[in-house]
Length: 607
Image (cartoon, rainbow, N blue to C red):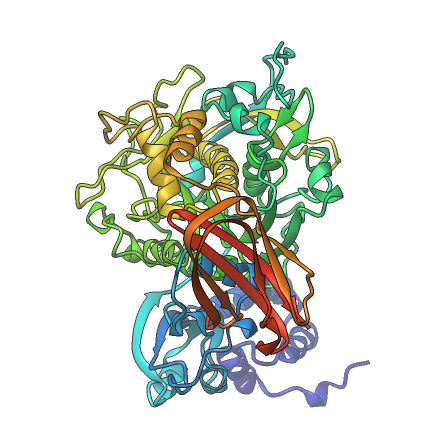
């Protein structure tokens, strides 16, 4: 039985209700017992009914004082003269991508300084995300905390991003980018195509044939060895759907990460299924039903987007995901996302911001391209005549971003496909693919492994169709860099002679793109055989075709530093002997041999 003498008097009780700020939830138990014993029985029911409202109101009052800030750090906190230990931050595949494309390593490859992060956390701020490329932390804090942070010497600039109100009240809206997209069960029937193609594409035949994509598949290029990072809003049930059995059986899903809400399971049925459908355009592999454009590529599934709301912090989440993709060695990014307006309209973008240089996400996408990643992004779904925003969004406005519009099965522009040009008058979208009636797989309403073969309408689906096909082309032409691959696709597309701001350079033809690169590239085979490997003293390098004339040979360590080099004129050779490999310290190295336009690479282990 509760002892009434433990309760405060009525005046003290009113002060408790006024001052409680949810720092100690035990107070609510005290208040509840007080009402039950001391309040008049006729009023007791009213007070008990009002308590939840008082609780929620006080919670919102407290939390509404929180704002999001971007904190620019003054440096990385290290001596720039000291050699960067890239192996601590980047995988071997990431380093190899840089070396192949001759991309220098710099301070942007180093993570933000953890001592600075600790100082900011100790002030009371909550770290929401971070960016090594921008050397920035995004935090949530009240004014008292921010006053402390402003005294820190490690901060060079502070930008107010506004409140994230959707975090504290139930979400009632949906991301504008997704609003006009529709998904319906496939009702057209599936006719087995009488072809000699390597795959029976089923429902996906038209969207691949429209691009002449089966040409690459028939040559054996289905994405093997290529890594695609899918940045999206969630991958509901992608871990159980039958259409991804092949990905799982061959360990092609390399991992997942949630940047929007750390620690979440991106496969959970509470997550958006948008990323699942996007992934199916590339990775599905069910003969006679649906084959994706890159069924043998490897995938990272990265969540940066909260589908039920729209906040500018999601641009920073996107950048964090792109940085992760860079660090694990992704070759391509598919992003079926775009940013224009937000729930907090104070942070809205305008068309004038669509110049590739203003929004955080577009600058981040450009940085990803500078690191050698081929960034593929949907143009957007606001192109209809009645749309309040008809132009492409961010990061589709990025100069180095491969921006994808949508057409129907016959090649006619989809009415919803966002248009260009960018504000600074560059042509966008870059190219287009089927985004009306696209074959996709979606999770069933009741969780099961079958999923639902569906028709999807949106540039969210034309983008991955292109991304997967581009991965196959790059697999076939590994000596090209990301910009060369994009340029080749453009100049061999259907509108190459007359690009416009509706479909850009038009619908790609991947057979022509391949032939174009074959004619202009002396060597397309990256296979340089090294034996023995691992090696101790002497190493032999074997070429698939004879090497003529002068060649340059360089050996790089994981830090990107040349540890061995030589130039020779050998006439015509099929192999090279390195008899002094023993002078190199034990470790992992990359060998590059260049002869004119020919480039060969191989990884070795020195014992």
